Length: 295
Ligand SMILES: [Zn+2]
Image (cartoon, rainbow, N blue to C red; front, top):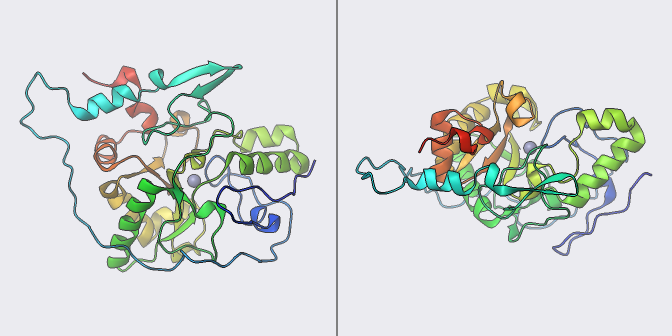
């Protein structure tokens, strides 16, 4: 069952199957063994606008210092409140034997191999951020949700100002595309192998529209751990939180996140939370675990 038919997409665009199935197809997020399988790359990528190396206005400021020391005992720290409202335990429901997330549209949604988005979920307000991409044309993966896209534009503008050449590689990934990738892997590599290396449809954070893989020229805009050692990778690790992003899959946290270190995969969660998570050096799984929120 080699599903090669083009995917239907929401925003009136046609993506050639050859493009969809080519390139590096990555696991839940990125990397892992889910190499491109079929279809040679005859690059007919649609050329469209919205993909220049432009910059948004630079608002490089770091506002939002969450901890205003003057908190009185009676007021609840807004960050603690947000963590509680979005805790892992309070945002999940068992449906048909599967653990399904109840807050898919929230900026604080936590998707992982044990927490699926509702089947077929499509985020609202997908747009193409005005940043430099590693490829030409507009594809499904060029999209992000509006708020995340705006933050990404600021992040990229700041990195450009720092003399770097950060590029967006892969953002939104639809449920349908995950199904196609998954089925394709089963057909070509077998079920057992697929289940080992490939995320089940509905469990990719990319489906939220809040995550994006980025890279730089130091490694040919690829998605490899060596990105972490490049100028762009180092800058990103240091500054992502100022713009509301976290490096989602930290080094040595495989058991918590389900993924090895992915210095290229960033997740938008909002400035205050991102800075707090980063300062505490936690994974999102830990940060939103009810048992770890100190009241
Ligand atoms: Zn990713």
